[in-house]
Length: 332
Image (cartoon, rainbow, N blue to C red; front, side, top):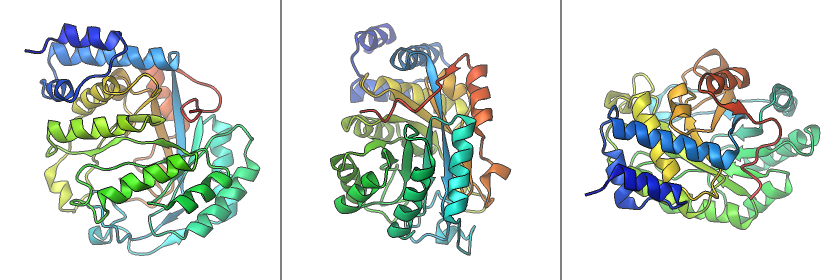
């Protein structure tokens, strides 16, 4: 029988948890003493590897369009019929968003597109954004699957890394091949881009075994960060009927994810930002403007999106200090 004290001691020795141990911890009641002990250990590890400093990253959407990848949890999916027309921002607007985030002190700036957005356009706008930012500012792409040549083009355009995740039930709740997602991660890494990832989007129907397998997968390629994010129901969709997990359950998964990562993985994220996530070991959040796959508003800053300042406030409420300067996560 597993013993929480033994598992905490294992973690304190710098060892990651096994799959069976991860499944066991995920199966504990969310409000029991042992879960809170694991959350305390996870936040201790997060503070240790990040020097007690949390980060705030910021993302703006380059475009918004109905998407044929049909991720059932996403407001962009054609089937969900939330957004029925396409829009995109100009290079000048992209530069303005990036400069504003830089001014506000974001530790990294992300450019997000839908999967079908023309890659050449992203490169052009990315180069324009890069040219206006400070050389040390970290620029990250949140885009669809790419081949090795296009991954190299991202690197050459000045991107330091990408966000890419093998989502829960990929290929079942989406029309994207899980192998395609894995191949893209390999391509990004081979091109010299640092990959950030996450166990997402978690719903009540996902088993502890599924979550454990995703935690282990994210650890397998030594990412900039891992973490966990709960699914935000899109009103009126089939998947919304499945409901949502609580913030406390998400904090539990965030904590267990941290203990499933090697110490070389500095970042541990959660989304959407919340104090419980930070208390459970999350050491960075995202601010967002523009389209957001969890929102039904075209401008998420008028809806679910948090700002750089509000993310910082959530961390301060959780007794975290904020790192000032370029993100440390992408220096692998």
